[in-house]
Structure formats: C-alpha cells, structure tokens
Image 1: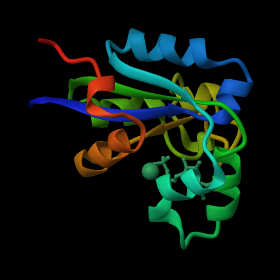
Image 2 (image 1 turned 180 degrees about the horizontal axis):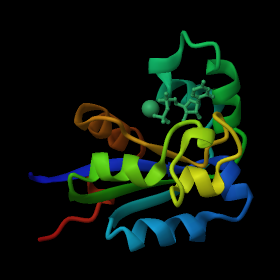
Image 3 (image 1 turned 90 degrees about the vertical axis):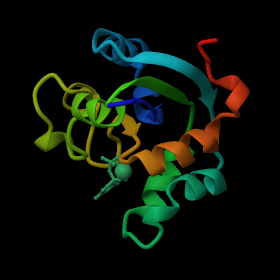
Image 4 (image 1 turned 30 degrees about the vertical axis):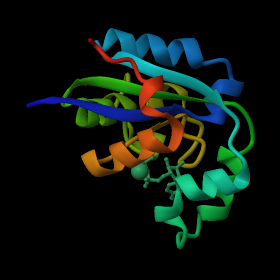
Length: 142
Ligand code: UDP
Ligand code: MG
C-alpha cells in the first residue's frame, strides 16, 4: 500500500466550540502526519462548490450555510492507507451511530454539525486537496 494523502476539515461547529486542539490531538495520536494546514472561512459559494456532489440532497442548503458560518481548519494528512484510517478515526456521519472514542462521537452535535470532514476516496481526496491547497503549500520530503 503506497503512501496516500487525504483532506480533513475541522468544521465550524468544532472550531467555534474550541475543539481544534482536541481533534488534532486525536489525529496525532493516530500517527497521522499533517503536511498542510490553513484556517479558512468559506463563502456560501465556496461551500456549495466543495459539496457540489450533494447539491441535489435535501440537506444541501443547510449544510452549505453551516459550512460557511465561520472558521474551519483545512488540513492535508499523509500516510499509509490514510483515507480509510481517517474515516475510521472520524466515526459515522451521524454521531448517534459513531463508535466510542471517534472524533464524531466525542465532538459532533448532530448529523449535520459533525465536527470533521474526511475525503472518502482517492479521487475525491485529490480534488478536495486541490480545492484548498496549491502544490507548494504542501510539505514535500526532499
Ligand atoms: N449531512 C447532513 N445530513 C445528512 C447527511 C449528511 O447534514 O443527512 C452533512 C454532514 O455534515 C456530512 C456532510 O453532509 O458530513 C456530507 O455528507 P456525507 O454523506 O458525504 O458524509 P461524510 O462523508 O461527511 O461522513
Ligand atoms: Mg462525504
């Protein structure tokens, strides 16, 4: 299994609640390597672009209002099988179904305000990383 990269976002609910440090602590304890990070404040249009795949879902307007409601921390993580490993550490989309100890079980409020984003496939990871970061903003081992 080759080294992969994935995109994670600490969403506006978790940033506003003061959980940036708590969540990064879990990511680092999981041996995930942070290779880029940027505090962002998405416009409604940017949030709609990021979540375009969900544009026909009933929750799209509410989700993109939420995602453009305040500060969020976008990060690129790198490691073996990191896409799947991040999804495990995040827990289920709905925190009611999330396993104990997962980020969403600990810090999500509900299925929308669920603390973190994580890419769900190699293809989406690439495009989501590109959405937030230029290649020279991502740490490269030389
Ligand atoms: N979401 C929502 N209502 C739903 C399902 C999802 O508000 O019924 C939101 C939630 O913030 C979720 C995001 O939309 O994280 C993207 O949904 P997806 O199914 O891709 O979940 P994820 O990949 O984030 O677990
Ligand atoms: Mg998703």
